Length: 193
Image 1: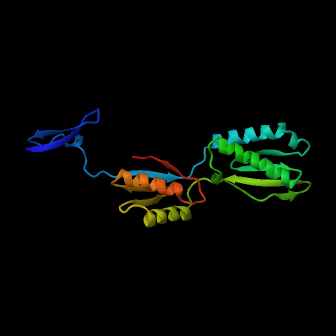
Image 2: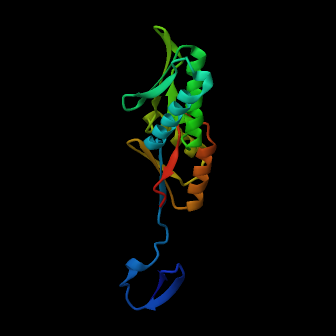
Image 3: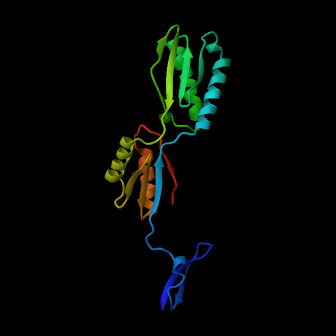
């Protein structure tokens, strides 16, 4: 006879004796691997909402009157900020950053150039950074190998990094480690299994 461990629907574990190994599929696997994916994605709708809020505030604020200040999409991933002085262009970008923070979008997801003059106006061109580059994925993998718990494995798949381990506690400590790391990309942790 064999003793089989079975997990009930309410989460309790019970042992059952049987003479055959049938129904072992319902038994607990002893060392199943847990994993999660590290990604860098931007919620485009939230960025769009922040941009619209910033545009509305710029059009209504007294200190922007007469400065021809504006902020708008430039293509699908670009943002164009215009004003008649460098300080006003920077102020519009500051308003946009404030709106992003309020909407929960990391400032690491947006990269902006310095203001440059174009005719009578100053422009700031910004773009959204999405996806983990191979270089950043390797950096994150190196941090996990050097500072993370032993027995944690990493694997790069496209623009994602899969982190797996037999211990869920190890995965939680890796998430904490990556949140505290000083990286130039906004990270999200998805598909935690």
